[in-house]
Image (tube, rainbow, N blue to C red; front, side, top):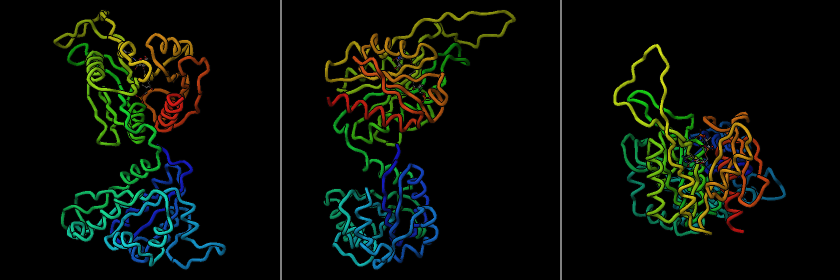
Length: 405
Ligand code: PMT
């Protein structure tokens, strides 16, 4: 998921976890965001202005009387500039000031001036975290609209003991920031996704499979989840992982197992949409040898039989007109004709064409180049080569746009 063009204001208060914030800023920048930093005097005892200005590529704001922009005051202009205000680490002291509405330095006045979404990331010693006053202050912040408090992690703390109070890792703060900036266009919706390859055994040693890594499907699962949907993924064997632990993963190996899992899951639950992204084997060995097939100096033939078509089977039981289904077409020739035929024969509402003739598209890589076709329209929406996370975003945007018409 990208943060292209987003303005992120990072607030740092004086805790040891401040040393991780340059890494967080670097991740925001890598995701396409512009970052500005406001820090307390104590934060600057843990991390230097030079480091923060170098990684953010912007001047640091730490003095409430900073007058670099003479026509306005920094806390007002930054508040207008930022799309989100992320305070990490948030110490017990700064949380107390936020809860009481105190503005006595650059960070806390900034909080009072800012009206957009705020992400507060507490980090402190376990005893301080469990202090009833701190907990009461946390509840006060949670009751304020637009203020999200990320719960601290459990682990080794700077004071040498292990416990609750540790700042979540920069990667998790990045994901939480992305979630807060993502429109909840799939809120209260349920989405079923098939993902990855299937594996069909020839004997205990060999199998038939394909190059799917699951990256495209899991990027779609993450995007749907970030937009508020509850997501179930029926996944062939992959090493990629979903970003959110509340994405339900049902692991399968063969095309037959994926078929049974998908049909059962679909019959038992109410889904608003289904995304068929798995690269399912079209054929499997008619029999699987119980022992390793021995090598001889002559040709052998494998008797293959067709597998069941999951997309077509779900297309038959789709609830018309409120349930939508989106399939993928992986092609090497006559791309558009084949994709449109598949959309029709499987009763899909959308089909996403990726061609192995396009460099950087399809299997394995982190990018894809796709054209999205909508039922009833001959012309597709052709997208540039982009990351699979960006493709997922564009696909979900397309679905939301067309389903709300
Ligand atoms: O996993 P990655 O490495 O990120 O690669 C992504 C991808 C290339 C696998 C993905 O973008 C993709 O194109 N997935 C579909 C691959 C495929 O099998 O396409 P197809 O044209 O053979 O199938 C058409 C549609 O029918 C697909 O939605 C497929 O999931 C579905 N199908 C096919 C056969 C079958 N037995 N059951 C099915 O549901």
